[in-house]
Image (cartoon, rainbow over all chains, first blue to last red; front, side):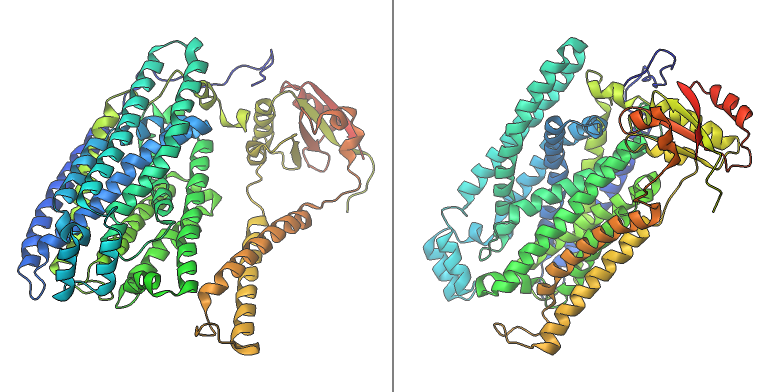
Length: 438
Length: 180
C-alpha cells in the first residue's frame, strides 16, 4: 500500500470486542428445537415403518438415514478441517475471513465420532460383509437365496479388507488422525494470537508445514473412510474416483456453509468490519469452481462406466436410475449443478448477500439429495424400486435432526473464541478500503 | 463525429488508486458525464465511480457459449443418428452421454472467443490513435504506476479555466490540457 505523504489512511479499525455476536446463541437454540422435533418425528416414523407391511424396515431405514446424517455432518467437520489446512497453505484474505468458522467446524469432530459409533455398532443392518463374516456363512446365505452369486463372490474376495475388525480399526485410526490435526491446529491458533507480530512469519511457516502434510494424509484416509462407510454398502461395486467425489463434495458443502455463516455474522461486529465485498466475491468464485469440479468428476465416472457397460460396474448405476430413481438423479443434477451453476455464474449474485446465501442453502440441500441417492439404492428392497414407505421419510427426519444438533454444537464452538485472528498480516489488508487494494 | 481539433480534455494525474476513485466519484456526483479513468491495472471501483455499471460482453459470452454447445450437440446428433448411423457395441445411435464432452468443449471455446472478440468489437480496439498519448506523463505512467482522470471537453460543464481549477482542488499531482 503506497500511501504518499498527502493522502491520509482510510483503513477501518477493528472493534475492541471480537467475540461472536449474541444472536449465535439464538441460532443454537433454534437448532436444538429443530433437532428435538425431528428426533421425535424420526422415532414415530420408525415405529410406523416397522409396522408397515410387507417390509417392516422402520428401524433399518432409521439406521440408513443415520448413516446419511453422519456423512453430511462428517463432511462439515472434516471438510472444515481440510479447508482450514488449505487456507493455511494457500494464504489469502478469504482464509482469514473463514478461519474461525472453519476451526469451529473442525472442533465438532467428537460429535461426528459419536454419530459414527452408532453406525458401527449396528453394522449388521447396513453392510453385508458385517453379516457374512466367513466363507461358510456366505455359502449358506447363497444357498438359501439371501444373496446373489456375485455378492457371494465379492464377499469372499474382498474379505481381507471388508470385515468388522479392519472396519473398526481403519475408522478409529481415521478419526484419531483427524482429531490430532484438529487439536493441533486449534491449539496453535490460540497460541499464535497470544504472541506479538514479530512471531507472525514463524507461525505462517509452522502452520503451513503442518497443513501441507495434513492435506495429503487427509486425501488418503478420507478415501478409505468413504469406501468403508458408504461404498461398501454395495459389496459388488467399486470406483477409483469415489474418494475424490467425497472430497469435492466436502469442499462444496463446507464453502456453502462457510459463506452462509460469514455473511450471517456480518450483521454485527466484528464481521461487519472485516467482511468486504471483494472477499465475498472471491468465496463465491471458489464455490463456483467446486460446483464445476463436482459435476466434472460425477459425470466423468458415469461416462466411463456407461461406455464400458460392464456387468460388474453398470448395475450400480442401473440400481440408481431405473424404477423411479431417475427422478432423484435428475433432481440431484438440477440442484447440485444446474441451479448453483446458473446462479453463481452471475457476478451480481455473488456480490449480493441475500442471494448468495440462498444459492448456498440450495447447495447444502443438494448434498442431502446426493447422499440419499448414494445410500438408499444399496439395499435390495430399494434398488431399482423407489417406492413410498413410512421408513423412507426417515431420510428427511434423521439427517435434519442430526445436522441440527451438529449446528448447535458448531454455534457453541463458534462462541468459544474471538472471531478474528489478530496475529496475521492479512488483517491489515482486510481492513483497507476495497478500491485501494483492487 | 466531433471535430478533431482544439482541446480534447483535462488530464489529472494521481498517485494512488484511492485518490483517483475519490476524485472520480466526486466529479460524477457533481454532474460530470464525459469523463474517463485510466489505470495501469483494473480498478473496478474506478469504473463504478464514473457510473459505468455494466456492458454487453457477458451477454455476448453467454449467447456464444450456448450457441457453441447447441451447435456441437446438434452436429453430433446429426452425424450419429442421420448421416452415419453405426452400431457401437449395441448402443442406441442417439447416445447423448457421449455427446456431452465435445459439446461442453465447444461451449467453452465459443464462450471464450465471443468474450474476446465481443470485447474488442464493443470497446473500439485496436485504435491507432488516441489524443491522450499527446500528454508525456500519460505516455510514461499510464501503463505502469500512475492513475489518471480525464474530464473531456465534450461535457457541457467543460470550461477550460474553471474545470482546471476544479480538478486542482482534488489533490492531483498535476493537471494538463490535452489537445486532439
